Amino acid sequence: MAKRVLVVDDSFMMRTLIKDIVSADSDLEVVGDAENGKIALDKVKELKPDVVLLDIEMPEMDGLEALKRIKLSSQAKVIIISSVAQVGSPQAMEARRLGAFEVIAKPSGAMSLDIGQKKGSEIVKMARKAVGLP
Image (cartoon, rainbow, N blue to C red; front, side, top):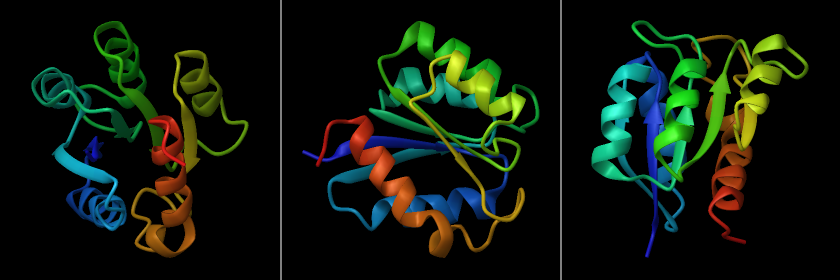
């Protein structure tokens, strides 16, 4: 049975690109998406994903606040995918402190149209690792 993935990013284009990356792996199933942390919390309760791929910079509720709340109410592993989460950045360190399974930096800013080529295999590899798939 495929592992369930929720994609959270305020950009429709980024959600679409990330969903396409994840959907290419038959062991992973995108069960939904959300455009901010507030909606993501409702979707986590409703859809019960195994993995949440979460942006940080979003309106209404940012990814770090959503991460805190997801960790309180769900067993889902959270992987941060964000342009502000560069290695060693305060946001990346805070995400890890709050319990993020992994932090992946978007390769070229908030609208990383090249995410598939530059980070696609890393996203899939980390999602698989988070749910115990080889």
